[in-house]
Length: 238
Length: 238
DNA sequence: ACCTGAACACCGTTCAAGT
DNA sequence: ACCTGAACACCGTTCAAGT
Image (tube, rainbow over all chains, first blue to last red):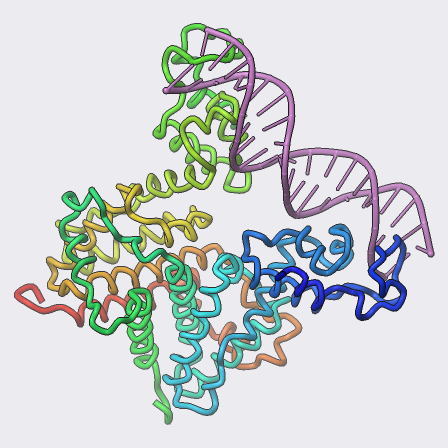
C-alpha cells in the first residue's frame, strides 16, 4: 500500500528509541525534536507527489509525519506557509545547469522548459510563487541570481533584466497552468456554428509533428521572448 | 452598511409578494423561482467585488440571495461550477472593441491589456480559466472567435492561430497573477550579498517613467509576442 | 520547547420534509 | 420543481495539559 511507504519514509519510529514497537507517543516534549522545516517540506512533497494537492491537508501531512496535526503549528504558522516552503523547495528542481556552460540562449531555453515542466506538475503553487517575496525563499532567490547573472553576462543591460525575467516568468507560469488543460479544451461542440473561424483554427492546427498543442504554443511564445531579450543585448558579448 | 446594499440588490423581498415585511420564507416551492444562473452569477460577482474571494463562500452567496445555502444546489452542482459561471461572465468585461474598427495590432494591444487587468482583479479565477473547456463557457468562446477572426483577417495563417492565441493568453494569465505581487517582492533583504547581480538588477530598474514594474514587464512581453505574431502573417493583408 | 488531545468556528454538500 | 432546516464529514487552527 502506498501510504505505508510514506510512513516508512517519514514516520518517527526509525529515529526514536522509546516507541520502536509503534506505541503512540505520549504528550510532552520529545528528547529530540520530531519535526523541522526540512522534514515537513520533504514530507509535504512526497505526500503531494503521491496523493496530489487535493489530498494535501494539515491532517494528512501530520499523519505522514506521525504526529498530531496541532504539532505542526509549533514549526509553521499556517498551511499557507507550508506551501511557501514547498514552493521554494520545488524551485531547486528547476534546471539551471546551462548557465555558465552553454550559450546564453541555450541556457535560457533549458531553464524555461524545465521551469514550466516543474510547475505544470505543481500548478496549485503557481498563484503562490507569482506573489511570494524572495525574502524567505532563498532557493528561489538563488535561481534568480543565476538567471540574472547569465543574462547580464550575455550583454543584457541592467535596466532590462527585471522586465525580461518577469515577462519570461509570467509566460512560464501561464504556460504551466495551460499544460494542465484537457486535450479537448477548445472543442466547440454544438457552438461550432457560431464560432466558425475559431473552430477552423482548432481543426487547422499543425498535428504533423505529434507535439502537444501546449508545447507548440510554449515554443512559439518562448522563442518570441528570447528574440526580444536578444534585441536588448549590447556590449562585447552581444 | 455595505452588506445591506447587497441585500437590497439581490434579496428577494422586492420581487416576492408574500413576505414584503421580511418574514422568512417557509419551506416549499415558491410561486416563482427565486434563483437562476444569471442571478447567482451576478450576486457572486457583486459579493466578490465587495468582500473579495476570501469572503466568498456558498453561505455568504446564499445570504446575499436571501436563501438557504442548500437552495443553491438546486441550480448549481458545486461551488466550482459557480466559479466557472463567474469566469464566463467576467470574460464579457474584456475589451474586444478594437477588432473590426482598429488595425489588428492596436486591437490586440487593447484586448491584451484589458484582459490582463480584468483577471488581475479576479486572480483566483486564473487557474480555472486556463483549464476550462469552451463548451459551457459561451462568452469565453465568443471572445476567442473575435480574436481568431481578427488575427485571421490580418493574415495570420490558420495553423498559427491557436499557438499564437494560447501563447499570448498564457502570458496574460501569468501577468495577471504577477500584477498582484507586492511592490517589494524582489527586495533581497539580508540575502543581498549572496545575490549581487539580481540585487543590482532590482535597484537598476528604470523608474523614470513612473510606470509600475509589472506594467513595464507586461509591455516588454506583449510587444515581443506581437512581433512574433506579425512575423507569421502572409497574404494580401500582411 | 514541543508534543497530545479536546475543542472551536467554520467549510461544502446531502437529504428528508414541506408546498 | 424548488425551497428550508438539520445533519454529515470534513477543514485549519487554538490552547490547556503534559513532560
